[in-house]
Image (cartoon, rainbow, N blue to C red; front, side, top):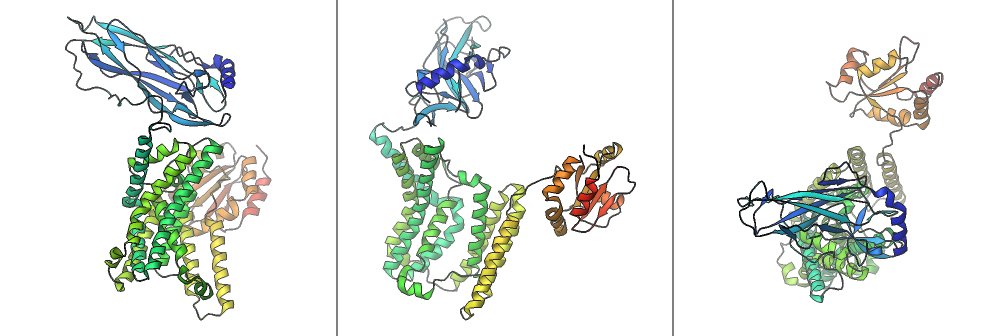
Length: 594
């Protein structure tokens, strides 16, 4: 935001920034910020060093400006401790700032946001005959600065934090409550562009080493056997093709990091944020895609289907067969490396985020070069490939064993999904397996073209339909209440209609009822209009209350069963079939709206 805008914001929002006056002296609290004080030691010795910690907790999307140079209007965060007779304060120790991209000015601003701490080191005077009770230094800390969000700024009247430093000649200072961070360059992100050249060089070396470390990450282990098989296969080929295949594998790794760099550029330029390392694994869509990809690769290892190149294309491409596979395998290895990384990788990636885009982009690519380097060395040194075991039956057994490893990792990824998505992904994985089995086993090279096309078109159509059915995001149109006998009894006493849906997780027919009846918008709307108490009665386990009620109260042998209690009717209406939506709708339409 521009300087004029910040001044205007401060004028407009000054009155709403006052903090709570009822807060204790060592705490400041408002609707957007909480500040509290902590002492490093309960008692301090004369001629000793100690510190105060001022903790800040800002609400989401609010921040302080960190540097006077980049803060519009110069209103950066300042702490001013009072100087007493017995204590003298040195410069405050601020945390490393974050970078905030201001869309209006197109500048990167240094800010403090979220939870952070500012340390105030102080020195106690050299005094004699100190009494534990009498020698107390009162300290007051003034706080200044504008608290801003993306659309407004406030200049709160923080008042002062106050505390008492207790001085005693026999104070035990061996167990401090916190340790001071190392004193580093203040108010600047680590290694900002424009510092000495050796700092940038050091960061690039760090980025390269970080890329090397990705090859030992547990997340990459599932594809390492696949990589070994690829290199074993290369050892059988000509030297030229072996080198090309290996370098294409490295290109796949670099392609992934190029995508990361491109995403980082888009996020910074258009959204004012940065890309977090491994953040893609927080997306259920991405995790689902990765899990299904591993299932497909596992089926490929089991020879359920094969990927072939048409003879006409192969004749023209010569050694081109497998090139795309080499790039794709490198890309996959890089993707799987992202969720687990050591601190060195996080530091290198964070440094890249704080740089001008050209330097940051280059640094991200250096990480990719570090990961690709071992494979490039192995490719360019044919002597190393020659030492690999000769191909044989062990390769087929090893290949199938890799399939089970890939399935294990796929299950691990699916379990990381939110619970409402897991079942659909598992069902779709099964459907994908069936469709690939159709693709690879229902036809062969001697099958006529028409039949081959028919089978494969059907398999693709089935996979597409299964995706629409199983991967559709669950939408709960009806406000279902969990089964509660007292809740149902209370509703009936007040002449309120009650609809009970008896279901179970293992019941396939129950899912059909859910899709054909309770997923209809008109049914959900009329249930809402008529104020019907909708109850989901889960009978998945034998001793669930709904299971006992289904048997002992409603005398029903199994699920699915839907029971509707209507005011004025002695007996409820029961449906044991799967298609009763229209009948249910007609009965509910007769009820008065509430």
